[in-house]
Image (cartoon, rainbow, N blue to C red; front, side):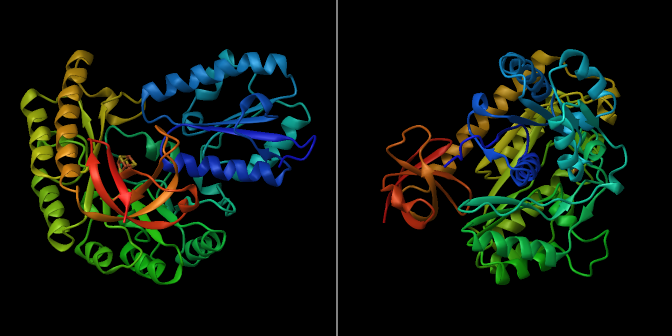
Length: 442
Ligand code: SF4
């Protein structure tokens, strides 16, 4: 229940789980400053737009969203608008956006979240503020508080990235890789478990290199083992696994874990060795295939998901066919597919032989059609079998039904009463399409 006259915060997030986690952090800072969360922007006193810059299309959407808020600000001049995150961290971006969006009160990037409280109180005094530090090393961690009753949460185990894949802007806007000590992570997970959280996703740009640079003396597999034993969280997921660092030790740890979900999200990005080299991915298609086979040999019920980019500069039809071939060879239950998007400041933005948009679109279409048929094949095989499902809430497509996820992260729609929300139940699959399983309680 809202108290009368209590200020309210509404948060809009773009981008990945890392960005969702940042948005949660900023929202938590606002709640400590007396704001109540609201789902309705029109009743908010503070709106936070946490941004993403991984693709140009995301940036265009964000610019549109900022523009839409102008009217609301005109009708409610005391409303504060904060625009934060990866997109703002890019050099020169605030100056560019400020010209179009004078109604924004706070601009801040990914290295200054620990100053958000200060920025918020300055804006409440009527100041317009912008803070985008260039150096991540002065950044201090602010972890979100465990929100009571929240079923699922994202927890960073590390920040930043050192891999410099040629297409990716992340290392430029999130700084160098640094890991959080296991005691801090386990403490956060235990607090989440106590507050009712059932599922946690451990986040890192490359979780497989966790702790390596910080010389912790333990690696990601060791962390998982300990988290499995001591966190009291029912389900533990992790993302993203860079294929180059995916060890047998990690696969064996997942195989022997109790709460560790048998799901590996490890992006292959391209199927041609020439393109993988140009992308600076540091593995070959043969190596990737071998890793996928090793996972399925050790954990036959494991689910594999991936990210794929089409139309990287220099990609020929033959290179693209190598990508299709990997999708044929590996039983991915799902693939996130993207057209290459030029990001200023990355190596790939200046490479010759950029692929025309029409060619990229047609390749993306062909890839999606193939993956959809592969996803369907995979899901049809699950019919008549029973799976553990965490019931998450009403189904988005039919609120009379419930929806949840298997340990392999497949979406399941089932019938059952709302009292099951938050519980782990056994479900028999009775039907499927490429994206959804339909089941009934066992
Ligand atoms: S591993 Fe590559 S794709 Fe992933 S965040 Fe780092 S640079 Fe980007």
